[in-house]
Image 1 (cartoon, rainbow, N blue to C red):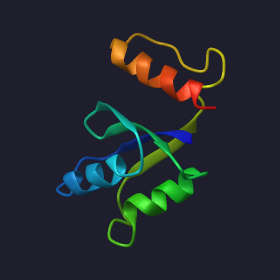
Image 2: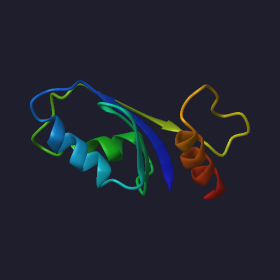
Image 3: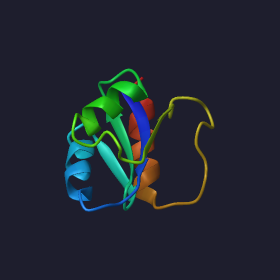
Length: 93
C-alpha cells in the first residue's frame, strides 16, 4: 500500500469528503481537512478520482505520495500516535 498526504479546503461537504478519505484505507487525521492515508491506489491521481468522483470536481484538494519506508523520510515534532502510525506503514513495505 502507498501512503498519501491529503489536504483540502473545508466546505459544506467536508463530512462527505472525510468519509471518502477514511474509506480509502487506514488513515491518520493530522488536523481538520488533513489526512495521511495508506491506500491500494498507485498514484495520487487514482486516489483523487476516487475521492472527488463526479460530484466534487472543483474541490480545492492537494494529494501527494509520501514514502515512510525511506530512512529519515519524515521528521518533526508531533503526537506519539502519529509516529507509531508512520512506523507501522514503514514496516509494510
